[in-house]
Length: 358
Image (tube, rainbow, N blue to C red; front, side, top):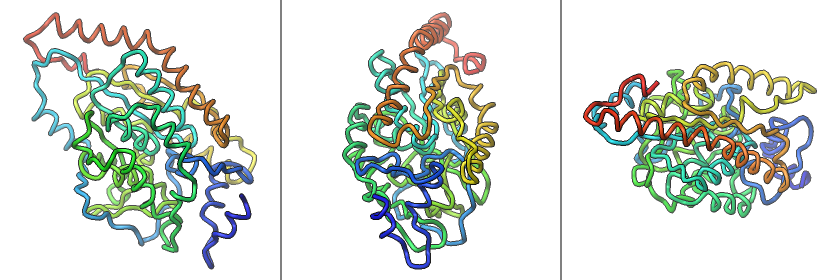
């Protein structure tokens, strides 16, 4: 496999897959030919890396609509019925690299206990998994699709100076998972969170091509070519919001369940220059995320080691960790739903108060 990777070198440029091996782990990483989430490279890492050069990919005409957090709040206030009889529930899927297989296990467990969110918000790998889920497909189908897609079909290498991977193949794959539906036609409300490097703010993508939205959310700087959108440059959502709880609140969620697969998981071992950089960026990202995570009503945080998902057995362990963590949280989720339903029943003609929205 390593020989195949080295044959893909671009003249005068480092091998993109080799660079990503080093980004993911200290030393050569055994890549499975039937492995999708690792192929998403760092789409994956909810951290900031080296900034891109001035070259970037311009988003094709795909109907993408990106809003600031304040614009989302304004639209929610304008369109929400204050006398609704049931709480609005959101699930937030955070970034976290190879640990992303845990998201699938979480969703499988929540489906079994009848937890059915109205809103799905995702960053990076969370946006990829979340798009498929919000489009109406069972979580098990994503598991099958991940096992049936090859690394190289998603690694569309480029000689552009802004990154090693264009991301167009990733966008096409996500579009195939959602049967080409634009975000606004999903059965569940969905938002992918990207980061605007020009304005240093999160950008919330709620309409348009789902594949392009996921691509923007997963475009780690220095690996993926960033996406030009309007006057900004979009990169991985984890740069500004690892687990975007505030986006879910802005979209009108009364109950927010956050899935953190990064900040409560084991740290990278400090055994090399690259692993020290990785641990540093992980710590920085999680320090930024901790206040936002505290605003969630419930937190599911499976402990998944990043190197544990490099082979089929490791990916299954990650999925199982997510499943077990969600099952353990089931009593808390059920109590939370009962409490919020009770608030609405006790005051049927009154709007949900700020207190119930935390």
